[in-house]
Amino acid sequence: MSNTSHANASGVFGAADRAGDYIEDDTTPFAPTLPRRRAETTLVADTERVTPETTPTPASPIFPEAVDRSSTSVLFSSPAAGLAAASRMSNPAKASVGFRGVLASLGLPVAPGPAEVVERQRVDLRTADETTVRQATWTRAVSILINNPKGGTGKTPTALLLGGVLAAIRGGSVAILEVSDDPGALNFRAEGNPQLGLGELVRDVTQIRTAGHLAGYTAPQTSFASVIGSTGRRERLTGDSVIAVTSVIDEFYGIRVMDSGNVTTSSAFQGAVSVSDVLVIPVMNAGDSVLEAIQLLDELRSAGGDSAKLADTAIAIRLTDGRPENDAVRQEVERLLKDAGVSALHEIPYDAHIAERGQITLGNLNPATRDAFTSAAASVVRSLQSAVSAAPSQNRKA
Image (cartoon, rainbow, N blue to C red; front, top):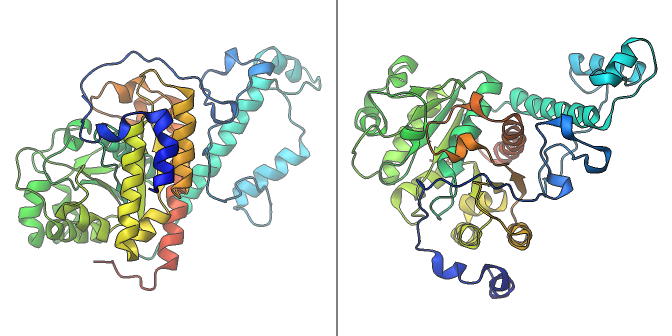
């Protein structure tokens, strides 16, 4: 991050640079005080209270990558999507819910109200994102690295929910793996109580020959993802162990999501970087959170090669845990991430299920939260397609 950027940020963040060594307490509950959101990023789950003056727009990236999801071409979409588009064009929109829906059912030409229009837009965007995720293909396994050097920014929930959404839409073949130096919270936050985990897999990695054997080291999720975390104490993870384990995982899973630690100079993190295709950075609306994220990008770019490519295509996911937030800080976070070259920033609304800091189940999310993670997953998939297609070889980097 440049000196100029640090100077511009200091007025908003104050002593954030000096807070880099402070680790947030992940066990302290906070009341769900929702921050005020700008109209263009508002997420709505309850459309009954929407008025024409306050009609929000569906979830979308704050500064998205250049992609057009609005095409309704009958010629170039799937047959089912083409028929649906043709049906909409031949049948003008009519209301289907509430009093307007009753009038429309009687044959009156009553258009949908503002709340129903918003809900239809939300469904259309979600459908487009799900189609992007479901239909993406590669000629090798692909990988996603989740990291922010600042603790307490939501790395583990992001790994579980992003991986869970990918698995739920694609019908499985997603492994969520812990790659932190020491045991992290992945196994605690995931569903299930597996007998074997990462430590045992590292020990037995050379003996894995079948998918059934590998499954014995996982915690199957209701999302159809498979989690490989630490079930207890284990030896400190090394870069060589990360590479060995991921090579085996890639034989049996199409997508690998890696939940990393806070030490970016560690051997384990460097090993994870060497076998990653896309970087996802969770952030909060706090100075230390975003400044350490930008420092990570600077370090990756300084390393050059594939590390720099990860930084140049990084995607940020901003979570809200219910703490009081400041609009000036929110706007500064957006500006700094955009200036740092982050390709897309996705807003995740407050969700009590995430903030409880307990076991995470994809099906327990609020609809707006799941839609937001689906939008983020579509961005990640597009970035994966670009990264893999641009690679000079289809072999793993390691």
